[in-house]
Structure formats: C-alpha cells, structure tokens
Length: 195
Image 1 (cartoon, helix red, strand yellow):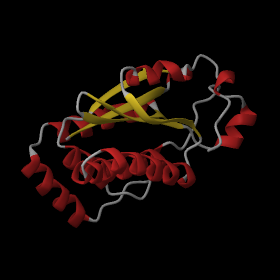
Image 2 (image 1 turned 90 degrees about the vertical axis):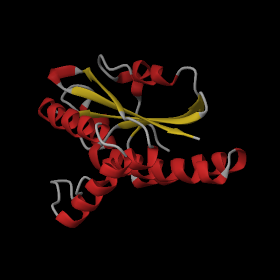
Image 3 (image 1 turned 45 degrees about the horizontal axis):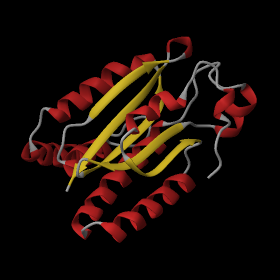
C-alpha cells in the first residue's frame, strides 16, 4: 500500500487521530490514499488474522462490518481541504483516509477517518444519532425501507452502508470531529463488534 508522506502535512497530525487505538491489539493500521487496492488488502489481512484466532461466527460478523465500513470510507474519502497537503501530494493521492482495526475488551474495534466539509457535519450527526436511537428491529425495518426507496445520494449510494454497520455491529456508533485548516473537519467513526 502506497502511503502519503504524512510528515509534510501542515497542522494535521495523523497520530492524534490514531490515539483512539491506544490500548488495542492492532490487527491493521493505515493512513494514506484510499483506493480499492487498499480496501481489498485490508479485508484479506484482517480476515486471515481473525479466522486464525477467533470463532468463525465472530470473525464473519467483524468481516461483514469491516466490508461496509471500508466501502463507506472509500466512497467518502474523496477530497483534501485546501492547504492540508502540498499541491503535488494532493495530486498524487486524490483521496485521504485512515483506518485502524484492533481488539480490546473482548470486542473488535474499527476506526475510520476522512476529511469532510463543514456543511456535512450536521447531516452526519443526524444520521448516526438516528441510527443509534433504533433497536435491532427498527434498524432492520429501516434498512428494508431504504432498500425499497431506491433514492441514491450524489455518491451513488442509498445510505445502506451505515445502516448495515449499525445493524451488524449491534452496538452504538461513536463519532468525533476535529477541526483542520480552512474550517474543514476530520471525521472519525468508531465501530465496535462484540463477541
């Protein structure tokens, strides 16, 4: 996996975001350009490690959540705020995101992060809070409703990925926003999957 030269970032400290993963038994950690190649490689590696050490039902559930989570990251890690990276590196990367997958306290934890425009924050908060307010039956019904609605976002999805993450993780989603240059934000989503 090719990584962006993070040392040259202006006022953007990727280690600050990875601090969430302290205390985890990290299975995989990555920060850089997000492409199908990185997503596929991460899925293969995490799947291999989980299946070698954990019960198959748990490994399958984590894998299914990870697929949705990394696909969500792939579709939304699509821009850099102005001046976060030098122009030359922005042209090379085209996108930027990070993820960390690890184990702690008897559960798998998945952290993903990407830049967002300030105008997106309210919609993200509203969406995640709405999903967190639903029980498993309500999530299942909502998934079916959105699936049958056939309404697609500007990125081509119907919003099913985040619903699936909430359904399959069976836990509340956690999120945070960090300010970066020019008023933009870095959005972190943490998903936990219990055994």
